Image (cartoon, rainbow, N blue to C red; front, side, top):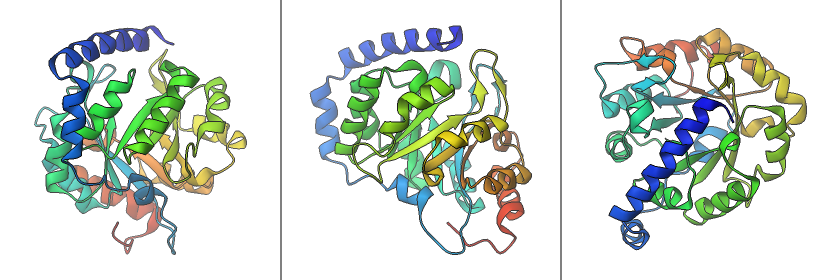
Length: 278
């Protein structure tokens, strides 16, 4: 685990304990009981359609440790609405406040505005956060292999599935990919995606080819999500040429005057101007 990730995880554990003391788990469960079923995140990005269209999980992010403030005029619901108009298949919402300027409340604000499923992108280090994610309206959660044990990944996948949520299991290193391969699609097919993070958390540099180097080890590229370092429609074309049709794209779009228009332009490169709507 890199020093940056260690710092984030240590802070997150403290935050979880504070949250648990303010809102006990039973109160979280009561809140979930009042909610409807989650939107199907997995089906939104892995749908079998002809002609095949590229699926972008468009990210709502105000800032990051490496880039600082990305978008000063930040309105998560407005950005999500623009993404929806631009052809996004799903939304990724950063909810970490300290490092990314996020908030759990953004998820329901987004879902009130658009019909797309929403991923809670945060550093999950405790089962409490899985329950908390569902109570906040999340349809999917991110599980980062670099900061979780194999046992934790399995436990959180089972719990997320019981709550009707999809899990995006993210890896960067080959070692962690090998560790997670047997758990993609666990406990049931249709609830789990595999993400390859092209950002090296030790150096904070990105390399799209990192996804391609992992491909020989991945049995089913249909559930593979390439993350970070994706900036242009040509990058999406490169992914498709390697059999990959899902990408998580954020920082580049967030810097554009209209993120939705920028997304539509990217998708037009890979799918053509008459691309079917999501």
